[in-house]
Length: 112
Image 1 (cartoon, helix red, strand yellow):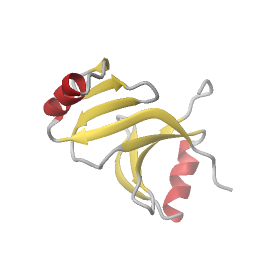
Image 2 (cartoon, one colour):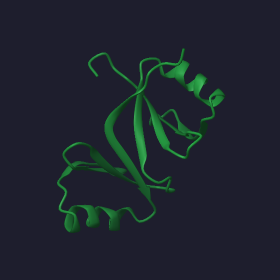
Image 3 (cartoon, helix red, strand yellow):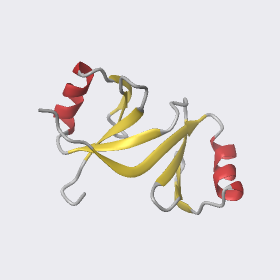
Image 4 (tube, one colour):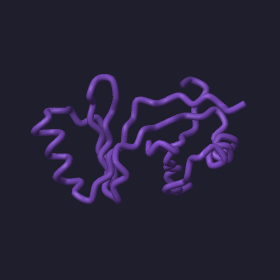
């Protein structure tokens, strides 16, 4: 039986024009900045947090949390999902499901 994944409230938008995207979401859309670092800027939207990151665009990336990320990471490719990008130092494991949804597979913590 497959593990149940839960979504977090994070959505990541990657773009080669990060500075312009930050201006758009902050000034044009009027979203408050909730996080800012060298690589990532987060905006509060109410129900979710939109993060803007510089990089190759994947479309919006949703964040799904697994109780056992290693087991889930091994199960998903056999069920039609493919790894798009993986970087253990972040940690990040972007996957695309058979229907085109790109998501990050993250580790759920006991309090989540």
